Length: 59
Image: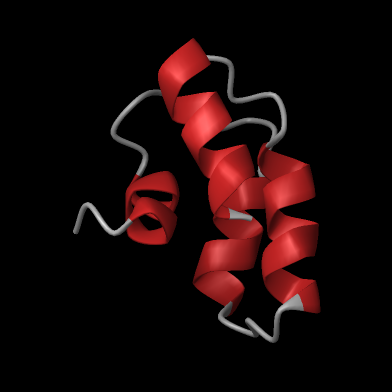
């Protein structure tokens, strides 16, 4: 999960956000705000995304 987040952060390609949501859910995350944010295709994800930063321990 952190490897996926790191790859997105370093490459600036956040197309795998829905996959990150699945991984977080499989790991036991049930926070709807996090899962919905990752799965929202209408939200442009960029470096500094609060979910990616949370997974990477940057916040």
